[in-house]
Image (cartoon, rainbow, N blue to C red; front, top):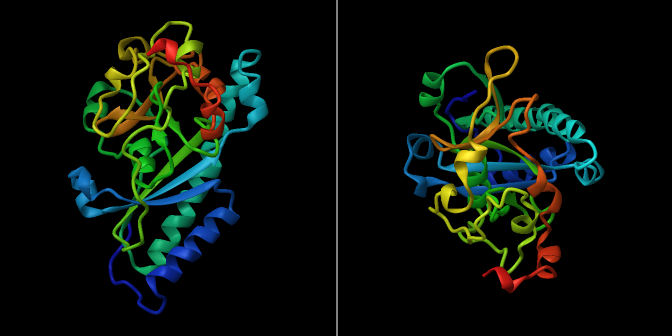
Length: 266
């Protein structure tokens, strides 16, 4: 999923960026952000220093009923893959039309071996969103947006288009909010504030959540990507809920978090 060179200068970059945002919003994107990822220093970031971060918000009613119907929640997440891929295709097509290089990051795939995981080359959807100013990493390691809290499906397209980028978010804005900390039935969330460069093992107990279980097919299903070789891997198979969804259910928007500060756990 990469494009060519030879930029068509008929339209200005600003006009192209505006057209891209309008097309993505019209097609259902809840948020569209642009970020500078050149500071990441990876081969991908050097080749494509600008990230287009896409967000589709979750259905609030389905998330709200998670404790009653977990399967519906997981099916909802899987169902969002298709519209998200459609958004990424819109971005790819326009970037190609304008002559820019690009590469879309996978949002779901089937992994059949540890070797395949080791060779995985991608870029974190959550890191991309923070670079684009769309949100920050919360205490439970989910991407938190001011508008939708952690209830957001992410997509990422990298490009060499010289689009204007937003100021990155490099520290969380959770303040004294402990909604996800209190809600975790395993006490796995450490109530630690995120800042750029902090490993997720500092935020919560990784070994519990990162255990990969085999599906009935004998293959491992890895849904989304989660800080492995720069990716975000939220590990789950459909028989066993490794991604519990509690963080998405209880996590608040920025306004909601301001009303739930609890200093007793600090």
